[in-house]
Structure formats: C-alpha cells, structure tokens
Image (cartoon, rainbow, N blue to C red; front, side, top):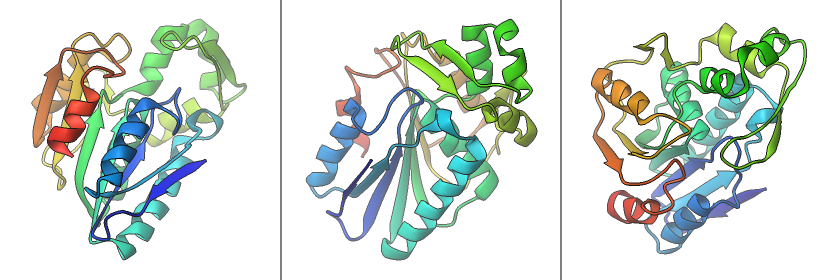
Length: 227
C-alpha cells in the first residue's frame, strides 16, 4: 500500500515509517494532512522492513528519490524510528543529490543492537548467522514480529549500525540539513543516542520534547512548526 498526494509541484516529502508500523499510522495521517494544505507533495509506502534486508530497502529508496528528483525541484526525507535508521544509512552510503532537508523522529541509530537487547542474544544466535528467522513480541506494540533470516547478517556485513560500541559512524559534516526530534520518555530508542549523535554530527536542529517514542503529543506541533 502507498499514499501519494500531488499537491505541490515544486516539493515532495518522502516519509519512511517505523519498524512495527505502516502507512496507516498517525504520523502518516498528520503528514498527509499537511500535504493536502499544499505545503508539499507527499509519498509514503509500506516498507515491510522485517520481510527483507536493509540493503534492498535502500535500493528501493534510491529509486524513489531519483525518480521524484526528476519531477520535483526539491525532495525532503523524513524517517520515524527505524525509518530514520534507513534514512541515515541512505545519506551515508548513497550521498543523494536531490535531497534538500532531512527530518528524523525518534530515530533508531542501532536497530540490530536494540533488537538484541530486547530479545536476548541467546535467542538470536542462529538469526545473526542468517540460519533462521527471528520471531518475538515487540515490547511497545505487543505485536508478534518475524524478521527475515538475512536481516541481521546484512546489517553486520554492510556496517549499517550508525551508533556502535559507543561511537558514531556517520560523516561529521553532512551535506544535508538534518532536523532531529526525540522524546524524553522514549523507552524504545534511548534519547541518549540522539544526544550522542548530535554531539558528533552537525545538525540543523535538535529538539528534546516531553513525549514518548511515538511522539503522539508533540508530532503535530513539530510538523506545523518545521514542515
């Protein structure tokens, strides 16, 4: 499923939802509403991260950015949680030309490490080697998730963790204005990760907001103020 609102011929926002979400989420609804006001055109699609690998998702995102760059003068990217993880890796490894701004909402910088912490390394040994899928109940949503057998192996082989062993593996002076928003009560991605990231990487703006991982109370205001 995808959502495409062609409301502004000059500018489009491509949004990547979180790992345990899809385009029916509240953030997509708010961004779509903003697009319908004419602020920007809008595109979002179900990424189904757990059914594939990060490398394949990045290839899809690259096709989207390059295609929309031919139609619009500016492309903005936004990513929520794991969508932010994918977005950061896209900037790091693809260095796209058409991207003008990047918005990250409670972004994950180390999805693999956070998964290992949540599930436990003992349960993940075969999965880490690409021998079997990993099934577990996601702590925030209570949903049962099955992750592709090659998901972890792909991350390790390609070096997709942005924060690893206390270090930030990302260019210090990115070419793109990056806006980061993170909730102080986030129990999924520690706000300390964003604090570490912005201490090592030049960003355009960083906000710590009184909210949780989903940013339910503040997201609409953020969109109205910054997008």
